Image (tube, rainbow, N blue to C red; front, side, top):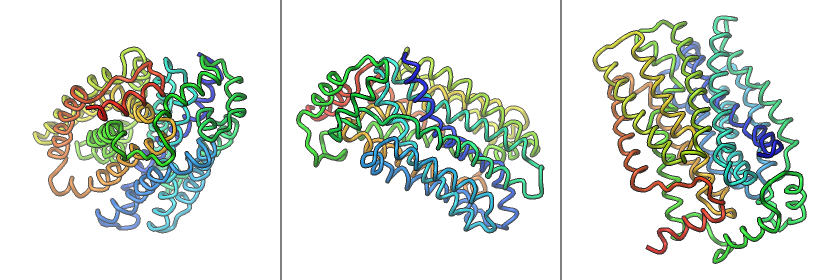
Length: 443
């Protein structure tokens, strides 16, 4: 594999590190903020927690526009700026509304990164290594999650307003990422869609890629046969890839993964652990996530996306059922962390390793930004609604029934994987999009 492509992919994937850090860092501060500002569960869930998620939703919905118009690289630079402004502003906020506004700005960056980063990496990666390279985004995401859990544990109690340090420290990786991403080249496939063939040739010549400019032009031309500029992802021709993107994003969130990551210390405390032990257990979640994400990335181009989704689905069903039983039958102490570690391992090797790779593969070049934005939007609509409702649901029905519902949804995911999900490993993007766009059209 070309070391330059690996280096570029890792730099772009750093957007995932800040995504993961930003998603989880609030878990160590959210209870302190609710007490500080004396917020109701509804206000706390929708403003202090939910504004970041709402920003992520908006960023995912609109992220396809700059990704297509100004390019993947320029969009990634703006994402870094949004991350930096959000971290600094959140740390300095004096009231919950101002805090929510700056968290919203960071959310815009998170949402847009789930569109631009996987699209960029998938377009520079050789087909045989695409799963692993796009998987760097998920790897950096879980490294960011682990870093946030460790940061929260270390910074807890360092000052009266330790939450400011918890959310503000994100500014350091955000600024570093922004500087690094200015050094990456523009996507050659995006350049070809803008009729900038000479620039694409220069980019390809700088990499030890298996594909020449002529090969890429031929593949793009073949993929564009029968297409026109007025096409969008919602026409009948692209109904099947649209459905695939919707369902994988839908089931990703109905596993309960984001609800858990946002409220991990609260969930552990509800299971009978003390505050310090709950924060330390959260670090264990981050370590487990990292280890099994590495396993998933190692296997994704060997076993394929579908096989990993089978493993993840079975693991989800077992672990979530056990978590639900633990809360329903009062199995306090170490049982809940162990079951949740199994849940995280199942997510990391399945949905975690697969989702961003799969969505970046199923749409054609000229609609990849829009398709990625659609899949990300579905993901983030649910990632906004579900965690925002967790404080209310835990108070109303309790954690047991909530985790039991998530377990049932994973049974439905298993059916999706078995009956609908195609295997995409090792197939050129143009060939894959041609195959999927005609799969249901001809039936």
